[in-house]
Each structure stands twice: as structure tokens, then as C-alpha cells.
Image (tube, rainbow, N blue to C red; front, top):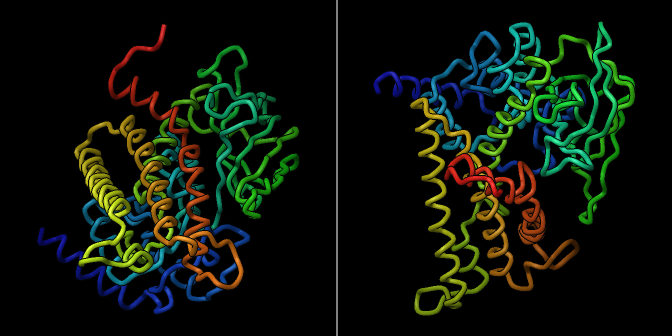
Length: 396
């Protein structure tokens, strides 16, 4: 405990000296730092903050120091997170490489692959995207058909992916491909390659909101060096499942983020609905908000319990499906309640008459509908819970 307190004092002093004042303010969506070759820093302090955090390895605090990470214990990383939160520090780097790819590289990659890719992830030099879903292989991911043929000195990839988040901005992709067409799960491999490789094409998918975070991605005779296949050919399904566990835990830990992280549901309802005899005037809304707040508290405790079990060495892999399903429901209900509490002010999309927070609440509510699809659909996660957690038999 004394060592942790020493670490806390040292981390607090370092953050106080090195975190710029402008990096201690709420993060606008347009200033999120994804890293990569094409990153534009609207605020110069963001680059300074990233470089300083990366130099300490604190963008990936628990990764081994030999791969650029911070080398911290989970307890120390928890203290660091507390100290960052206490000063309102912005996340120095948002990265699929940190949230998903890096952890599986640490477990499955060769030493050469680790030393090649992990330090670049820590420093935010490469922005990654995920090539999993295909037009005919969404929920049945193992049905993917993108082919990867062994051409002796290289792999040759042909096929397509869909719903590839930010593929049009990514530098590299971690991709599931089929190296054996005679098997299903056992014929899948996990490869990494540069998105500037000849034959790679991305097409943004325009959503009803007017934004395009997702893409169709096409591969036509894409040559990939042999050493960029991770693990053993045909064993990529195991890596894919492990990566999904990290993805589900990371996106669920924050409940997918909130529409307005600076205000609670209760505060919002009191502002827009008002009080009567010291309590929220709308009794039905009051009851549902109270139930939601209890649900969120129980959810946070579940996350903490899972973290403690993982720290103790327990396999919490299948339990991530419980967390993912619960987090999707939590965020969808929260954003719906927030918009409902705002009344007509929660119906704004753009223009005068609406505050920015109101417009963002509306958009967050609509965006939350995708929470039960991304990272594995709720139906798929319920199947995982049924079979892997509850031990129920497959339907015969």
C-alpha cells in the first residue's frame, strides 16, 4: 500500500507538471485523437500531451515496457486512471490498437510482430481498423468468405468487408480471412496489412445522420507479406474470439459513453421537468430514472468484480458477453430517458432554439440504437451466455 501511495504522489506531480491546461477540459468530438499518419491536431497541446504520455508508456500503462508500454501493475494503472480523472484530463489517445489489437498481439504474436507493431500503437503512429463483418457474414462471423491464398512468398487476398469503422482514415487493418475453404472455424486466419497496399479500396457508407463512420472495404489481389499473419494459419478464430472479448469489455466499461457526461439523469430531469414538494414532478419518470440509476450502479459494480476476477487470474472471457449485453441496454435506456426528460427540447437536430447539449442528446439517443449490434449483436451475446456461462445445450 505504501508503494501505491508513493506511486500516486509521483504520478500526481508528473501530471500536474505535464498535462497542459487545455487538456483538462471536456473533449469535443472533433478533437478526439485517433493517431495515425493522417492525424490533424486542431489543438497543438493535444500533440504535446500525446507525446508526453506515450514517452511514459501511459497510453498503454499495463503493457510491458519493452514494447513501449508503461509496465505498470493493474493496481498502479488504477491509481493513474484516478489521478487523470481527478484533474479532468483528456484521453491522450483513442485507439483500436490499444483497445483491441494490442492485447491479442501480446498473447498471440511473434516477438518480431510485437516489436514491430506495439511501440507504434503506444505512440499513436498507426491508426488501425477492424476487418471482421462481411455482407454475408455478420452475426455468423465464421461464415466469412474473404479468401487468403498462399502464393509461396506472399499471401493474396480477395474479398470484401462491411461496417468497417473508420477504414477510410485507417493506416493498417487487422483482418479475418479464409485460408482454408474446406473448413469453417478452422479455416480462418488473422492477418495484418497496410491499407495503402495496391488493391485496397474503401467506400464510406452514408448514414441517415449525414455522417459516415462506417465503410465498405474491398480487396482485389492484395499482396500481404507472409510474416504478417498472426499465429498459426487456420487458427485465427481463437484470436478473433479473444479480440472480441477485449472489444466488448472496453466498449462496455463506460456504458458506451453518455449523451452528456457532465450531468446526471436526475440533474437533467430536475432542470427540464422541475420539482414538486422537493421531488421530480413527474412520478412515472422519477420512478424510471431511479430504476436506471440503480441499474447503472449495479453495472459499475459488475465491471469492478470482473476486473478483480481477471486480476486474480480467473477466465472472465464469456462473461464479457453479459457485460456487453447489459451495457447496450443501459446506454439505450439512459439516452431515451434523457431525451424524454427534455421534452420538446430533446427533439432538436440542428438550428436555432436548441442548445448544443440538447442536439447532442438527440443524436446520442439515435446512435445508441447501434449498441445492440456493434461488438456482437445482443442475440449473439445471449447465445454465448446461454452456452458458455449457463451451460445450456444447443437446440437439437
